[in-house]
Image (cartoon, rainbow, N blue to C red; front, top):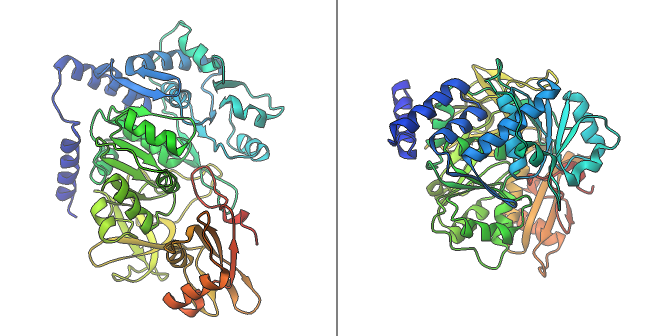
Length: 520
């Protein structure tokens, strides 16, 4: 696409979202003044929203609701309190609630780095991460306090059962002093999922313009002033992205500390949510409820973070309407492609098309672009490619594009299909085998609730496929029936010789299967 065509798409996306809608001149002046003063950081987006719509509800969570003006005042006080530690690097170990959001805003106002800590970390893993990431202060929920052990790091409780938290005390206690924008913006460090190894810290880039927002709006049609239920964990790239996206749109954030399908369905209806931010496994859990709610206001259900099975996409849209948008990306790449509802209807397994201004190329092992239909290495370029790992490691960059680590192909119409991870592909008896196509096939069996297929060592063939299968309650299926089903639909070398039945697949907090924890 030409630069003029890209700009036209970005401009149309902005206009459609309502961001260019006229308002009272004095409010627009205050909004623009705040952005000029604070920049396009999370603090700048939130302060500007508070100047334009001070009385609008900003957060709805288990503790009640807060307006934009209230959150602005509360985070000023929190930032001044954190400043007694200088400009500390803050470790945030929280579920989804106001404390997590307000800590991120306060840190942005102060210019502090924030390390988003996975709530699924063990005590030993947490100690390692806190040391590696050089965390100065920890903000955490009461339920995770025991994980700190004898650590002497200053800590603040963000959520306490049955009493006021430390953050609530900071937010409601008037303090002296005024805040000015920091000389250098703080960075957000997100841990990689670590499904096959130890998590690494990835530095998110500083936003320098509105093009990233417009790029997302070109594929995911959020509207200004909506009500966005963020069910995906905020410590994850996708949940944090939803927070940034919603804040830039002056949306109300609807949060619940724990994901409970029945409660989320009720919340969607009760709060008249216009958008749901989730990971794919959550869609399955919502569908497992007796009946989906009637939410006529729901226009967008945006998912990412792990593979979205095609059958799940269709089942969800049959129940909730054609509102599903699936983003393919990663902590390092941010986004590469988005599949819209009509594309998922026609091609349930597709990852969609690149947003405006995004480059996506499939390269062969020789470094040459492949033809449509041929599988190769996925490279992507956009304005939000990560700034590297905190341990100094990097990913391959080619012609300004980052190697995602996935293999995929483009159909003639430009739709992307992801065939699997480069390190997931196995060579069995000299044949390249992709576990994902076997997973997709098995997941369509009516008896199967979920499954995982991966490579294991084989003394004769080098590697072979193994399948771990979870059945619906009351369903019956044996290993030979699984193998026969694959044999009838795929090549001989794709048949898993090992089939294990489990009560549940081991998953991390974002729904990704922990391959390393599967029984061998």
